[in-house]
Image 1 (tube, rainbow, N blue to C red):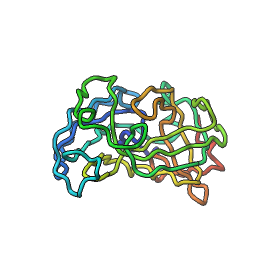
Image 2: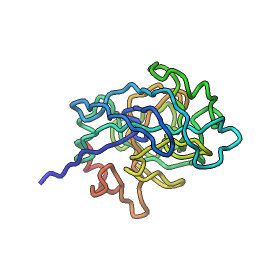
Image 3: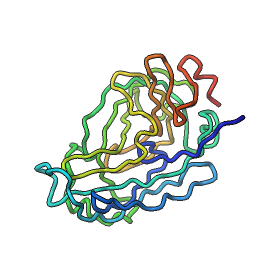
Length: 241
């Protein structure tokens, strides 16, 4: 019997960049998820509604501004059955599979160039503009290429940055409800990365070339979108198109 699940994923997965508006931190309002394309990957084109004052649940940092922001990520639907099927169904976006080493992991930060909180004006901008910068809280992971298992490594050099949104700084919070769908990479550990067609994104990182990062545990087992899927680094080639 073929097993399969419909998976809800968010910005952390980077293939479908979709951000929804925010409401009070004590009771954030979510918005309907965008409809998926037949391939199973929701369309590109993030949107964000203007932010509204939130009720801070903790004392804000010095740079947290007059009120906290609660930003809520909308979810996108992915049809995931197996790794090979997922890659085949989404070949218009997924370009390769690589084994990488997690060379660095940043502390929780904003995705501004220096990691500090953007201005209130920037947070309250007109987010209906698809070319506008999208500010969020998260962590940046530095990936170093170990080997290409299939397809292309689409980054310009042997290292790349992978951004995982979600977290709270002072009174500000970025709510990523599906952040636990795949465990976060571990600094110094190995992972399997799916590379994608380079996508320009603002403000940081300026170009995205990594769509997914699946961590590898000490035994060599790879944790994909389906945690029951049995893949190891040793038999990875058998699970690729």
